[in-house]
Length: 158
Image (cartoon, rainbow, N blue to C red; front, side, top):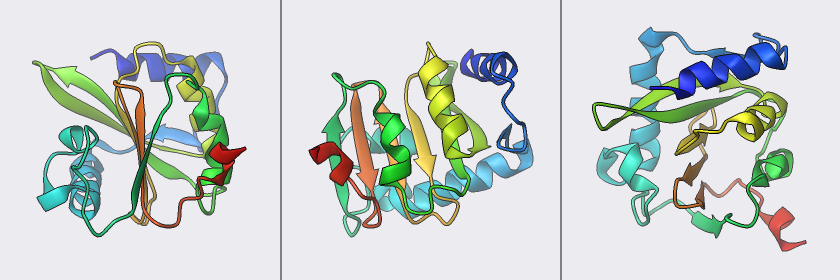
């Protein structure tokens, strides 16, 4: 369970404003994860297995991209997500006893871009609209899933 420590180090080293990047209350973790899974994961299943292909709700638009040649694709987030000036939930995956464990943060996009660029032991992570109307998931296989019809992927066509 190292990712939380890395996140906190990045916040300190980069003097990130805690009002724009903070860990959500542990009492809200469960409800944020549950709402995310209910909104996006097929049959309300586990978010971890959904991003391995075919695990998202069938009624949702889901497009994927291999980002192995573009590790900093997150710099395009302001163009991809609607209302990019608003904070989002970010679920950073860690492991505990060989099972997924999530650290749930609320972040603004510039702080999130900085964070992703600085994290070294980052595995899977999920960026979720606070309205739960879109989700972006990057898995350890260098595949990003963009779920929801309001996401704009035209920036990848340039």
